Amino acid sequence: MPFKVTVIKRAAFNDLIQEYVPEGRKETYGTCGRFTDGQVFEVRGGVPPAGFCARAWASIFGDLAVVELGGDASWINRPNTMITCCNDGLTPVVFRIERLIEDETSQTREDA
Image 1 (cartoon, rainbow, N blue to C red):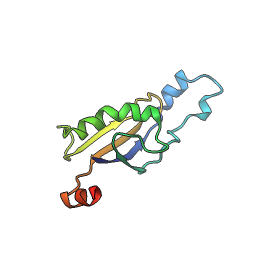
Image 2: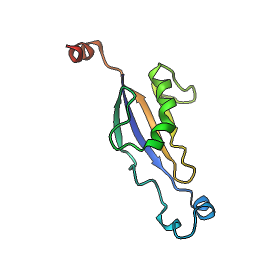
Image 3: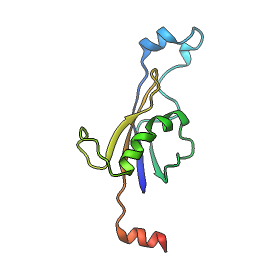
Image 4: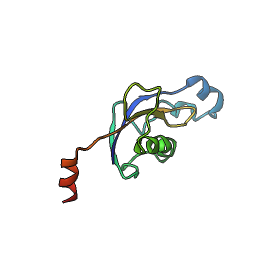
């Protein structure tokens, strides 16, 4: 089953960076440089897309599985959709996971 994973928003908690990152490294911190806002990935078979951050993938994989199994988040106003994030406490990334519904015709063509 295909999914679309979209980067909704990146954040950097500068107060936490100032408190917890060692001197000399603080200036290297900002929003996650691995992703850009609006970036879209297509996912098939539960395999991370090329270049996807392993830490972010591990963080969102459980929510991807919920959507894959037909689950919905009752607090999200869109079916087949989950909002989730990378669990990096200093520079988190928020993602939207959408299950893409394929019609039977396209599935038949792909299987042929």
